[in-house]
Length: 184
Image 1 (cartoon, helix red, strand yellow):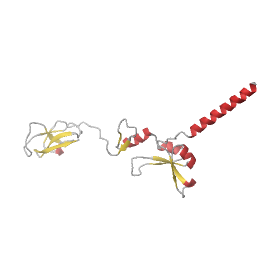
Image 2 (cartoon, rainbow, N blue to C red):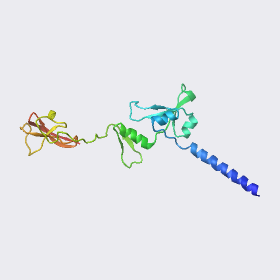
Image 3 (tube, helix red, strand yellow):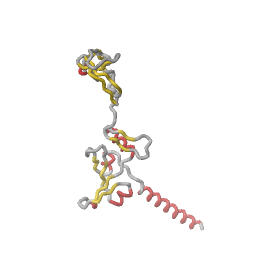
Image 4 (cartoon, rainbow, N blue to C red):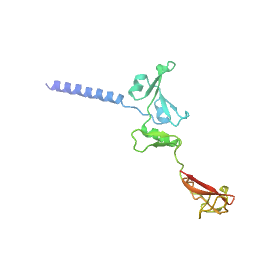
């Protein structure tokens, strides 16, 4: 009777190990960097005219699909096709923001990249509030701050204090009010 219990326990352990191995094999494999890609024998494909990079791995079709990769049949390729490994969501977001994109919208269940929409950091000007007469006199432009005046009126300007471009400004050029500009 004791031998039967031991045998059943062994069978149960083997079944659990097999189930764990099967679940492990079906867990997506993420390859998030060039280093990780090289470690699995793949080729990191970045700078392909897009913000997104990925790893082409030497996995067979069955293995590729089990690990969550994207398989593309190709007769000339070894194994009859190519496999692109998955890139994790956090790594995809990093790739987006690293290439000056905006990842979002925040809180979305289906975020996406808006390439080229990242705002440059606001920088302070070394010549902030210096008296100026033209745009070239200042690091970030010469603006008029005072009571309203008509375009073309003679004015003294001040150098903008930061690189921030949002807002409305009265531009000064050659000591005259050149007009107003508003930027979002």
